Amino acid sequence: MALQYEQIYGPGYQGPASEAVFDRLASRLEMSPGVRILDVGSGLGGDAIRLAHKYGAIVTALDAAPDMTRICLERHGSMESEGQVDFATGDVRTSKLLAPGVFNVVWMRDCGMYLPRTDKPNVWQRLHATLRRGGRLLITDYCKGVGTDSLGFSEQSASWYLLTIPEYVEELESAGFSDVLAEDRSADLLDSMREGRDQIARSGTSDLLHWWNQKIASCERGGLKWPVLTATRY
Image 1: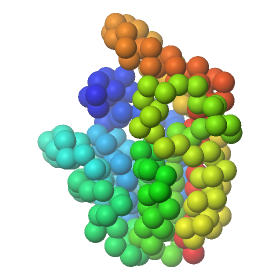
Image 2 (image 1 turned 90 degrees about the vertical axis):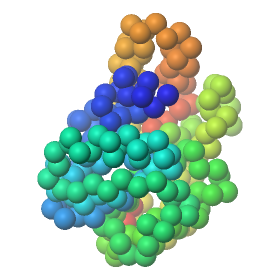
Image 3 (image 1 turned 60 degrees about the horizontal axis):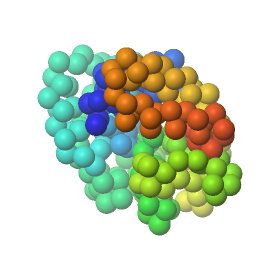
Image 4 (image 1 turned 30 degrees about the vertical axis):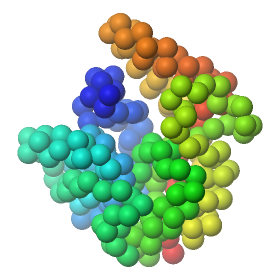
């Protein structure tokens, strides 16, 4: 499935891969050569490579799936990077790579939704602890609109544990983060999904196209949200 999604979004990506969106996300942070970044749920490595190449960052790319790490390690030798990327397999809930005060930035794209609701507070606390003082957190994720039935589809969302945007902010603040800001960028998600739908339609994958149309419809109704959240550890 990961490689199938990569055919939709482009090399290294299973989700929204626009370089313009990436640049807008990175502009929210202070980047300089040697900045230490933890990329949580790094997948096929698209953002990790961009962060290292564009900013000279030292990136620890952590993913829970061994196959993702294997693919990244196989590919990484052919990718030029001004910084450094270390791909590792591990669960953000337990990985010893999240040692106290190691990273300047935690970068987490579209994977918090897979954490069960009861596990989320512990993960936010671990991310807070692994940041250095003054360190920054950036998260993009799928969220649900306000209202218990607002999502509007269930086939795959049964494996998603979605928060509303206000709930997300509250949980990050409870974990000790300061200056928590949330910006609803669902329009970026819609643009990406509509572009992806055209590619799926050309491929003739009817099951995936049905699922894609459900996600688009839910996003258009406001049931599915895609925020950017930033926060600071003081």
